[in-house]
Image 1 (tube, rainbow, N blue to C red):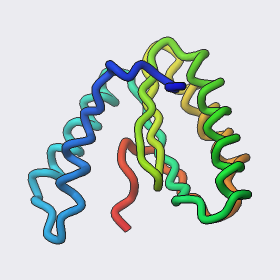
Image 2 (tube, rainbow, N blue to C red):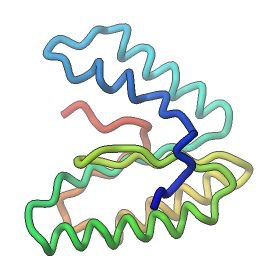
Image 3 (cartoon, one colour):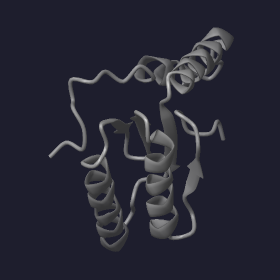
Length: 128
């Protein structure tokens, strides 16, 4: 079951792929920054949670429970995009109450964090 509308494109996907090269193109970073700034200017808010790929059953179950909470929160949003991979998830919300909604996602992530997650108000994971 999807958290959001799969037809909603992930504008960062191609740019993220460019970041994985050993020598990322500076224009790729610039494009990502410009895209994120444009979304912010249009009232969209971002949150990226770097949780890592679970390495045991307990961690996998914990992560699944966290994703269920994301799904519950996303159902209350007027507009939401949730994308990521085995290492992280990025939530983007839009609309008149985007700040309040992203704060709920951030609180859920902080509550679920077993202590090793990185939670940032960004459309992309940190470079490190």
